[in-house]
Amino acid sequence: MAIKHYSASADTTIVNAFQPNLKTRGTGANAGAADVLETFSIYGRQSTSSAELSRVLIKFPIPSITTDRNNGVIPASGSVSFYLRMFNAQHSKTVPSGAFSYVIEPLSRDWQEGYGLDLEEYKDVTKGNVGANWLYADDSTAWTKVGGDYVTTANAAYPWRWYNVTGGMGLEDFEVDITQLVELWSAGTLNNFGVGVHLSGAYEAIYSSADNGTYTGYIENPTGSTTSYYTKRFFGRGSQYFFKRPVIEARWNSTVKDDRGDIFYSSSLAGVNDNLNTIFLYNYVRGQLANIPSIGTKAIFVSFYSGSDDNSKSSGQAASSSATTRAAITLPTTLPRAWVTSENPYVVTGSYVSTGIYSASFAITGVAAPLTKIFDVWHDGSGKNNPWASVEFATASFNPLNMSASQTVAKPTYYMNITNLRNKYRNDETARFNLYIRNKNWSPTVYTVANTSPESTTIMSASYRVFRLVDGLEVVSYGTGSDLHTQLSYDISGNYFDFDMKLLDPGYAYAFKLAFYDAALTSWVEQPEIFKFRVEEYEY
Image (cartoon, rainbow, N blue to C red; front, top):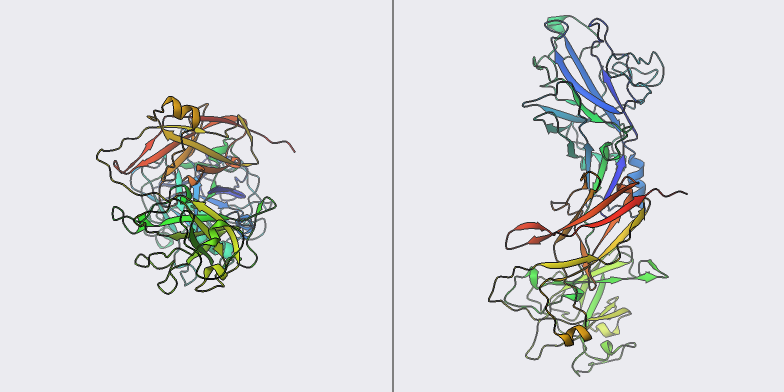
């Protein structure tokens, strides 16, 4: 699971626009209970120099992000990206168009959501009741500046003021990377009062008190626009449309690439990185992943032993495995040395991945008679140059392969299945999906069919998406960019991925589609199979 949503905890729209009579301003109006949010700029509607503005205020539950991080649900700072996602609401009015931009500014003062609904005539005025409006942040506290108080001073803690979003046709959804802002909120460096969303200063209506006199509801903006940018609407948190509500979406790469089933001897056919293999240790204690007490989050060490020759240990004997009755294999030191040193070429330095999971990367060279089976022994490294004298934690094995070139261009096609796919899932569960993939052109003999099953093919770069069956709405897109949040993991059993059903609206049927990266085409190729399932509300 590498996607998590944090839905808005409060939102509202504040305006200084005229009511339909074009005489009374809606500066006291609140729209905290409306199911849409609105931002616009209108110039010259009431007079040749009148300015009318609307701004969105929105807040998210940052303490939930902090709690999830402390509980290991999402990664530490630097390993996760946060995106503000807001979705366009279609309407019958004029939308902004052309070149324009919006800003997303952190607020410097807390505010109240309120209970108003009216975004047409602006008659749901607070009059001292709960709710923010153009003039007041809450039922008793005025904004320092009308239209909201924002973080406007750059300093070392937050060297920016806003995030820019460039518009076009006025129908865009917003997807803005606000990772830096969320991390400041989460760390307590900046108070979480939410953000304001509105047109940037160059596109909000021009107003100068020096030219037009003083009116407390105006925002001083002498370099603003004389063009109207009308009405941009988003769905609010009260919308009936589950997938259109504003969220902060956390994305991270949780991919586990365990090469145990595809370990290759070093070869001149491959570059340095492709000659490295990575294996994992999963420490389950009574069915739950748990850190090894003496290792915790520190480095762990791995040594390798032949399972197919008769060389004996040079000294000492370790615990019970045929892996430990032989001498440790000497590893090459000419490749990157982050994992092995020339002083101790028998030991690979591994690392902590997450709770109970450790990994180690290594290269291994073949000889005239390559080994057909190798044991990996995980230990604490206390034996220094004698790995067999260390405290051992676990022993496993793998069968290394030799790389070979081909005389033809491969154009593989695959048969695949999700072997553990169920018809229904609860909306409160996170499910793991295991894939079986094989070459579609596998052509066994009668003897092969009778005696063996075809091995599963591991796809090194695979990604998934999710769409709703009833209308084809794509609810999770392929995450093949920098975050790789929908990339599939793999281990000796094949490819797999985890998916959080909380991302989906219960009561509907959905489907997974998969895409594999084709290096020859340098593009992703979507596979034809569709894997259908239904999500249902879980009743406590």
